[in-house]
Length: 312
Image (cartoon, helix red, strand yellow):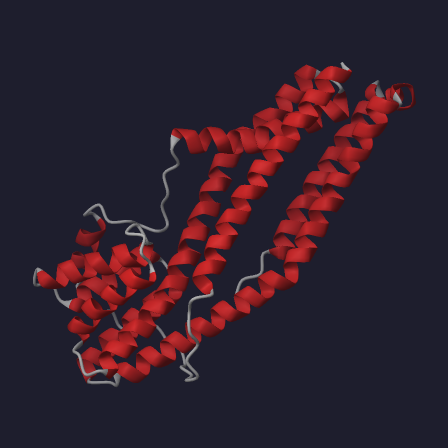
């Protein structure tokens, strides 16, 4: 029995390390992209939702052309299996620690089948955050090209070349989207339709606001250069605020995880070092106490996640 418990603890530690490394890698990618952006000093007031001047039929058609919808993400079989193990194996370890029953631990590990849906939402959120950061850099490139006297269509092509230098990876989100946008313009599609399609697929407020402003300025003759500078400024300020908040709550997130796992580790140490002392908790009414303890820990984790989820 002790050997089984030791093996479960080792498995729990390994998959906790894998999950932590995955989270750290995704966070480092976002930080590396964020560190390359430049903050203009101009300010811009976000416009209210303007009238949609693009034919909705064209937008629906482009959404059906196989282009990426950033509110959708299909997990591969490997990702689904890893997601199930990320939650299922730790849950099995916790179940064995609190019940010392292989049957109960296997039953509790079934909660891992719910994690792929949560993991999918995490990946969607991370991809949209990365696209938002990269779009800010794209606005700076567009502003520089238009300041040099280029038209809006030529400015997008010039910005694409600059983005390919900044992001050498051909699978970079903003490089792929700007490549699609430029090809559609070359095929005779209006820049408004192509940009509005991108904004609708991104489901990002900043990109949708920029598309509305660009449509309005192009139709009414507004100052596109100033609009882009101010748009880049607002997005940059939001990113800075988000980054400051993430830094401030990072320590608290770590503390919340330590406080969450501390009771589990204490119970594990007592259960395997002094089994006679803990024996009443594994019989009769003790099982109800253990079940209540797991429920309280689950509620505490849910509350900490809600508190730490600060949106700008």
